[in-house]
Length: 405
Ligand SMILES: Cc1cc2nc3c(=O)[nH]c(=O)nc-3n(C[C@H](O)[C@H](O)[C@H](O)COP(=O)(O)OP(=O)(O)OC[C@H]3O[C@@H](n4cnc5c(N)ncnc54)[C@H](O)[C@@H]3O)c2cc1C
Image (cartoon, rainbow, N blue to C red; front, side, top):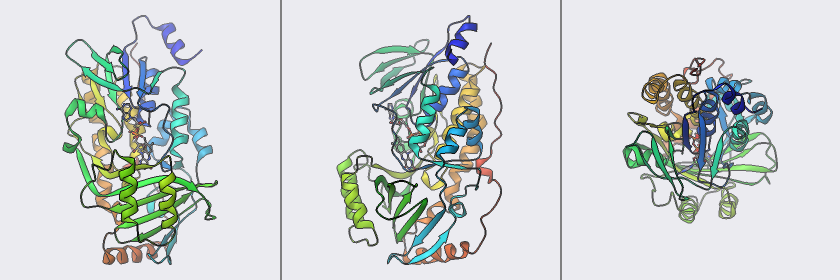
C-alpha cells in the first residue's frame, strides 16, 4: 500500500489538488511533503525526465535532517563523493596550495554530503513517484487566479484547476515571471558566468578537484572517482550575457573566446565542451524578492531565492525551503500558510545569500593583485587545521508539522 492509499483510507473530505512546476530539487522535495500532509500532488517538468546533469551538489546542516526525515539519507550517504583534496594552480600550472576541501567550502567533515546532482534528483523522485503524478515534456502556459482556484492551461493543451500552484522551476522561473513580471527586477548579477559539463577522466584524478586560475578566469576538474570528471569553466564578464544564456551555440562560442589563450588542461576542456551533451551554462547571480507568493501561487528554491553556487547552499536551501513551505500548509489555508512560510525562513535565506559578501567570489579574483592576495591566503590556510563546528548559515531548527485532520 502506498502512502497515498493510506491517506485516502482515512480521509473523508476530497484531497486538495496542487501543481508544482519543476522537478529539480525543490520540486520533488515539496511534492513529498505535501503528499505526506494529504494533498493530491501533480508535478509538471518541461524536460522529458528528471534532469541529471550538473556539478556535484552539497547537502549540509539542516538539509541533512530534511533528507533523513524523508528516509533517503542512507541512500545519499552511499552516494557521498568523499572529496579528499583540492589543489590550486597558478596560471602557468605551478601548485599554489593543496587543501582539504572543507577548509574552503565551509562544509563539515564526516557530516555533510556531496553527491552527484543526478543521484539526489533520482533519490528524491524515487521517494515520491508512486504517490505523485508526474507530467514530463510539458509546462504551464498560463494560469488564472480569478476564480475559486488556479485555472491552469498547459503547453500540451490540457486545462485543469488546482487549489494552489508552486513554482520550483529554478533561477529563470517562468512561474515567477507570470506571477511577478520580468526576471530583471529580481536578478542580481554577481559578475561571472560559468559552464559545467562532463568529460573523460584522462587525467588520473581520483576524489579530488584541481583548479587553475588566471585573473578573471578559472578552470577546474572535479573527479568523483570514476572514469568521468566534471569540468568547470568560470569567468568574469562585466554584463550578464542574456543573449547567450538560452542559446547553446552562443554559450560555447563565448566560453571558447574567453579561454582561447589559456594554458594547463584548458584547450582539452574546450574541445570536450564542443562535444558535451550535458552542458549547464548560466550567469552567476542571485534572485532576491520582497515576497515569494501572491494569491494561491508560491515560489520555492532557486525560483524564489537562488543564492548562487558561490554560497554552496542552493541545494540545501531548496530542500529546507520545500520542507518549511509544505509544513506551513499542513494545517492552514494558503494565505496563512504562505505567510508562515515566509516568516519561518526569510532570515535564514537572507543569511545564506549574504555569504557572498563574506568572500565566496574571492575564490575567483579578477585582477593580478587580487589573485596574488588570494593565493597568499590559500597558502596560509593550507598550514591551518580545518575548522570544526557548524556554521550558523547551515543551521535552522526544523519543526515537526501535523497534517490537518
Ligand atoms: C540540469 C541542471 C544542472 C545544474 N547544474 C548546476 C551546477 O553545476 N552548478 C550550480 O550551481 N547549480 C546547478 N544547477 C542548479 C541547482 O540544481 C540549484 O541551484 C539547486 O539545486 C536548487 O534547486 P531547484 O529545484 O530550486 O532548481 P533546479 O535544480 O534548477 O530545478 C528546476 C527544475 O525546473 C525545471 N523547469 C524549468 N523551467 C520549467 C518550466 N517552465 N516548466 C516546467 N519545468 C521547468 C527544470 O528543468 C528543472 O528540472 C543545475 C540545475 C539543473 C536543472
